[in-house]
Image (spheres, rainbow over the protein chains, first blue to last red):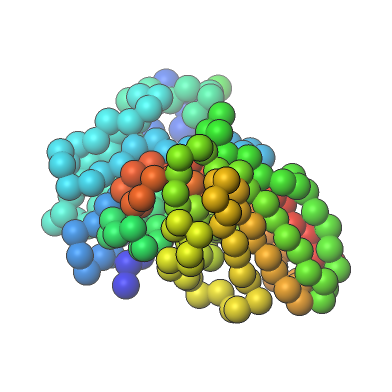
Length: 114
Length: 113
């Protein structure tokens, strides 16, 4: 069975500081991994995805994530936080089959301090 | 804007009632998934439809059912509503497989009293 654990339900960083949101996964097969962002009263938007190509994945809005098999991690980073980054972030895992579901973590709310 | 729309935006029902939620997928997307997102939780997979057939189901009882239509629209039906069904219901459409980007709608907020 696949699962995702996001460390920290709330993370606060100052504007301009490094953003680091942690995600660890469990999967019996090579996983596909995703980060989604959810702004208030909106659906989810894909930030980036890992599908067994390059281990360092670059996404939208300056975010990137690195797949580390030895650590079963897929942490999300951004060098410099912006006020508009305040949102809920979800890490998710799938095995990539058409009939397979995507398993989401519980989410991390990112707060940006002025 | 993802091109995926959901209706209604908000809905209030009482326990025991039935509800139908609707989703209009992006044109050409042959797969739609439905998720339940309880307050403070991540989305939980309900089921997936591929070319109008159910093609995967999460840990939800049979009173959760769905339909997908040839015009890229779909429905989620919930019978005998319970208080714990109160949640944001999201649909996501995509082409063929989950490693392609899923486009999420804004969701329907269901409150069961």
